[in-house]
Image 1 (spheres, rainbow, N blue to C red):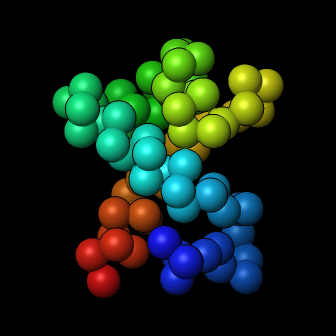
Image 2 (cartoon, helix red, strand yellow):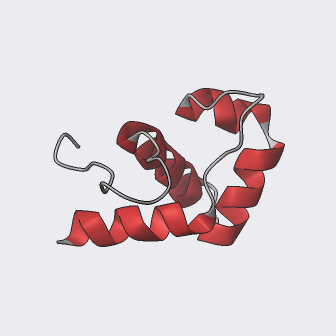
Image 3 (tube, one colour):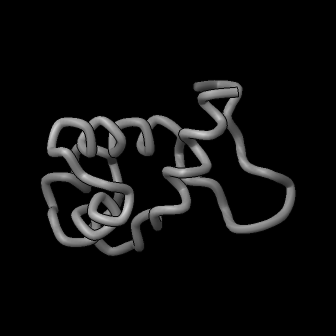
Length: 73
């Protein structure tokens, strides 16, 4: 996960380990990227597992698409 980082421009990056944990939740609960983003917004236990703050926004579905694409290259 060390090799995954944000680009010099654009929105700040989400921590790669937190995104990977979120993707595990998606597999375990059979969630699409859209449903995962909604679940992270809604469920405190999912946020806590991933390490996201309760007061801050969570990643949108595109963050998971980008991470998956990066992991495949």
